[in-house]
Length: 498
Image 1 (spheres, rainbow, N blue to C red):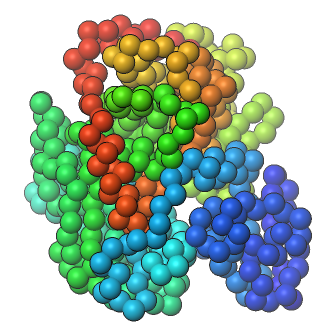
Image 2: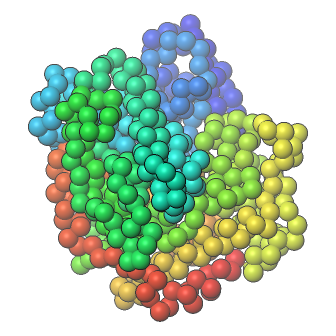
Image 3: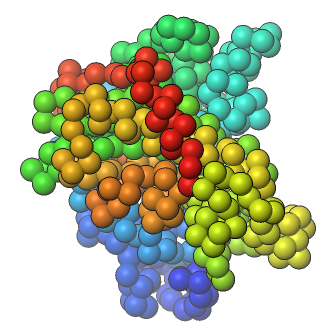
């Protein structure tokens, strides 16, 4: 018998099981509800749970061989998994001719975020998502946002080469772990699909992103790129197909293309907003006739950067807050605050009158005293933190207003607001509405979909039919340059208030 320590809704429950049973079965036998719409076949990737020291694992495929510690998704995360599955387009398993390169073909879908990189290992015979792994983008030490990284490539000798090597090295390290986990060799990796913002894709391919930061802000490439594994030095079959999904503009990248294309068409949601809130806030307004999109320089506040006690959404980060309770990712001792926790705290301060409508904080707010943190340093919110959030949330809110104006429609005509990105896994929409990050008019229509960029990358990996979906989407899409709209500056000033 093996013993499992289950972290669930703030409690730790101990259970026992026979060795060799799948983790999904063990959890269900002991009364835990785990969402698995594919019936435990491993094809949906929705039954992932966190195993201490191993990260996210597909519980339906994970054999319990020894005593482990398991952290189950909270109610908010569980809801995201359900919504994501219900709104994702269904396509046949058709990986393409590259599947003929191996008798046991596997592929990897990669979402390159400015802060976090996520990899999904997929068996291309069965469509099973065998494993998911994530790591902090190693380029963050050279700059928290895309602009500072672009500057690094222009102000440092071999700066572009350094950033590319950092990313490729980390990708290969994690890919080696995935390959070892699956019991295959790198020659079985015959297809890799990348989604990410335009800057990250330039850095991946070693193409100068300098033009992205200079007017008129043009990318070196926006079209889909097809390479071979050996050209990037990736741990794969040398002839493996490397596909980089297309982007829309300098700051509306393949992550948004992949996310929008992953959403299944529905008569219920004919007009909808799509928001990916991260370092670069990317927005789209989808109607029957066209898609309007834009990007806003939100800055990295919602990903933990430039916040005094900020950190990414990793173990140890405070992800939710209320007056007498905090939620920490991984049920760890708190180490800092990620974006969703930051929004909760600021909404609380505004509600309690500790923060006025102009953003003035009466005094630094202590969240966790030094005696209860992993670092021995107190976790608090400062006036500078408030200013960072003000700038970020105003940029997002103003972008939404401009898109609606350009389309000539009102909030009443919008059927849904799809909230994308890893940020959407944890965000409390009530708090986001309270601080003005999300429009109050859409309060009852917000649907968090989680990492839609990763979902789209998986679809592109598994089915060449997804190429057709993307092409049709691009034909309908128009990019809006916010800086050229005469009302943007006024909207930005108005949306600074809490």
